[in-house]
Image 1 (cartoon, rainbow, N blue to C red):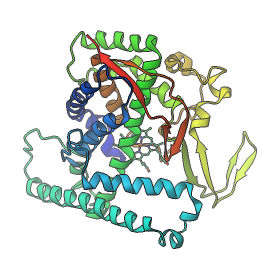
Image 2 (cartoon, rainbow, N blue to C red):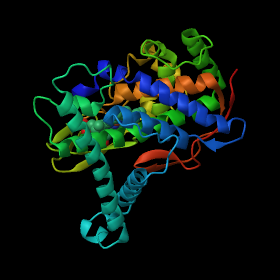
Image 3 (cartoon, protein in one colour):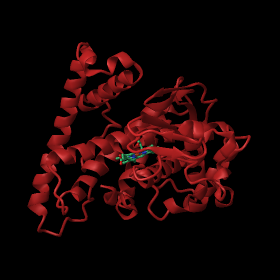
Length: 361
Ligand code: HEM
């Protein structure tokens, strides 16, 4: 599946992203000059629309209709998963199955599977009908379309699993990073001014959507996003099973095969030994190439590291740059400190992503 997420493919999705970013800016309009509000809800609806359309080729329009049985079921599965993660007594299936959560969990999983299965079936029929016909009328090829007709044919069940993992892994991570970045821009007006300066050099005063030529020019915005991912690592720990004895030379310990371990990405990103005494400060220029030379390649791992790292990292970066560019050209952002954090599989601020916005002329 990794080959599907190459740069050429994801660049084709810029128009979908720009279109949904434009809807988001319109939705945010009702929050102009109204004081604090939690921006994550708005951004999540937008990223859901983008990830669904580009993964499955189906338009969901969550931004206008956020309450559907499918979305409720997804939410319920994630809530229960999170609860089991922290409540050890709910982890053994024999105990979990005695609770009312088990039924809710199983019913919700069934419903989400049914939803994706129907999309896969429909798309397979379309694929079979058109496979000898090269003329697809310039229609966007979603990830699912690209997974049909490969050398090793995927079963419908495998396709459903791939599509579900993309829509689960790709949505909240991207939305959360955008929301943290907005909060940081709201606190650091000097950085916000520099982002705007760069945006003006690309777009002038235009509010048009970002295209594939614009995105690679957003060098400063990319540093801002990276610094935001460093300080607020939305996947704060990465869990692994050790499948062979692994010696860690720095700590002089061997992790024995068969044990579980976690990599503390959040802790690594705040380590003063790696990032210097100002590790807790927001400084996007740490990611300038000349300041990154001596840094270990695994010091920055918001997308994990190694052979099982994030397959959607370039796509995620594209989505984040496009959406932030569109928001920031329309609104001035103001925010207070992020404050205390909590981990619910991903990293959330306890008070939510509170920002204030006003129109930018
Ligand atoms: C800011 C955005 C994102 C962040 C921070 C992020 C982070 C991560 C991390 C840390 C992992 C490894 C998790 C683990 O092994 O426990 C991962 C895996 C994954 N990500 Fe992302 N991700 C982002 C965006 C995306 C997007 C946009 C997609 C797809 C549309 C995506 C699809 C995936 C998939 C399918 C995996 C599993 C890969 C595998 O198991 O081999 N991610 N991501």
